[in-house]
Amino acid sequence: PPRRRRTDKPATPIPRRVAPDPGLLDEEPRPSDPFELDDNHYEPPPPPPAPRLRSITKLAWLCVALGILALLSVPLGWVTDTELADVLGGVLILGGAGSLIFHLHDEPREDDPDDGAVV
Image 1 (cartoon, one colour):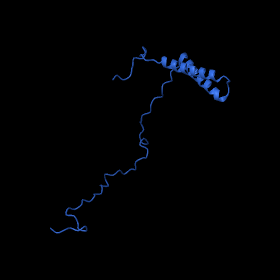
Image 2 (cartoon, rainbow, N blue to C red):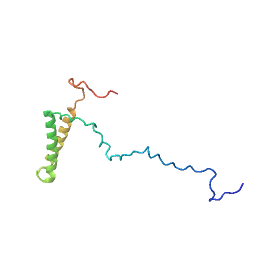
Image 3 (cartoon, one colour):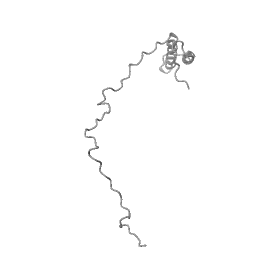
């Protein structure tokens, strides 16, 4: 068999790309925003009001804030007894955080029968 050179054409022709039929193309330009032409798109309802905090929760957050303030009072020079401020700040933060964790609701409420997804 004769040797082929690189400039020889291949034995099978390469298929050419066929231009699409102009009748199949969209005549109108598409909008950049897909919701521009959509008149009835979904609008979510307003969110429900936030639940009211119980007084024990407010007190626990106040303890955490006062504990942070007590710990910050040492470097700011507001107190002279640094050991008392450190201990008081730590106790307030730990007590407030412990109260928040202790008062979490784990059992379902009687007034709300929906307990979420069941797996």
